[in-house]
Image 1 (cartoon, one colour):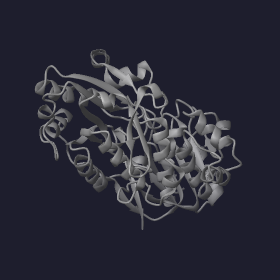
Image 2 (cartoon, rainbow, N blue to C red):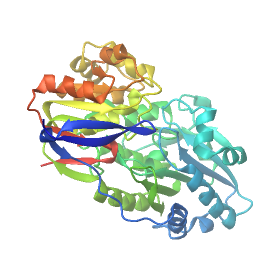
Image 3 (spheres, one colour):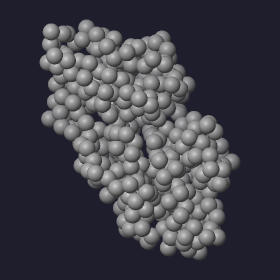
Image 4 (cartoon, helix red, strand yellow):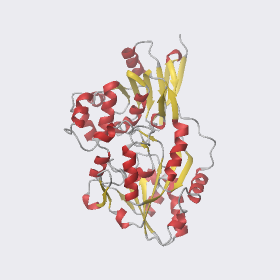
Amino acid sequence: MAASFRCLIPYGYGSIDCVIPRDRVQSILEPRRFPDRRPPEVTIRGALRNPIGAQPLREMVKGKSHILIITSDTTRPVPSQLTLPLLLEEIETGNPSAGYTLIVATGLHSPPSQEELVARFGESLLGSLNVVLHEASNRQELTSVGRLSTGLDLWTNRLVAESDLIIAEGFIEPHFFAGFTGGRKSILPGIAGYESILQNHSPEKIDHPLSRNGILEGNPIHAEMCEAARAARLAFILNVVLDRNKEVVSAFAGDPFLAHEEGVGFVRAHAMVHASPADIVITSNGGYPLDRNLYQLVKGISVGAQTAKPGGVVIILGECRDGVGHQEFFNMMAKSDGPSDVLKRIRSGQVSGKDQWEVQVLARVLERNPVIIVSREIDSEVVKDMHMNHARDIQEALEMAFRMKGKDAMVTILPHGPATIVMNA
């Protein structure tokens, strides 16, 4: 009997033990281990006290009366119970009389529940803050910032116009079409209007060859996001970098563009791996919260597809405790005759609206690679209706994949999919 290789793949709040014949394993692609870290409070406070390309926040807030703090929604693992108190400490040290509002940057995601907000911020912190949930489709809550050089009409939450200082917290990791998360994304899509987000995530921009994971230079989506952040007067950011256990390993604060650029450099140095394409690729969405629904799994699927051969099988493990996540996402896929059909309709303008970009990226993968979703929570028929395969566990998925590709197929494993930037050899 051939020796086995075992690997833990993140799934929900835990992990799943994946067992593969050792002679079928082509490569294990993981971000490099981060260096030994200091206590997270020390790391974050150090970044705030030594900002990149900007005054310390405690100086910046002097004379300000209405400060807007943008935070990520609960689909992102930002450790707000650590970061927010330290941000508020800097604000209150510099200007004890300043008023501030916390806005949750939902973009076009579903609004978080009260339970999710308590889990993110803690009951005590949440109770002490004026918290606003952004509503991208509520025109009464939006204000026009103006037209960007790209032609995009930028609408943001009205609190942008009502604030004299705008700061944002977030985290940096690779992103499947914006290049990286963090920084400028707090404005667009974070607190932008529905139509502005649709323009930024247009079929043409999503199809651009540089709108890809880990790419910023020449990426039209990133460039437009940066212009939007400048137009909206984003003045200061605090972005953290997390390890595979969602622990803070580094922090970058200061100018929204210079600090983000330095943070991206740090992440890129640890996340980039080189590989040869494989017959079968196993990946994940890094566990909760990013694997909470099928909509979010597209991030991990797209990364896995980057190291799969044409026709290679992509297996992704994701809990999907919230099911599909977005009904529009399901409808666009399920009501099509297949990936080529839905891509044709998106590119011709027959299909548009919320979630078109997620459908577009997924369909682009499915044109080239079959996908197997491993989840104990999601309904098998839902997955099949979306032109993918479903398995209840990893062994069932592997048996399915080996039937598709043959018993001699080689397997590559990306345990932490979205945190990895794959460069094919």
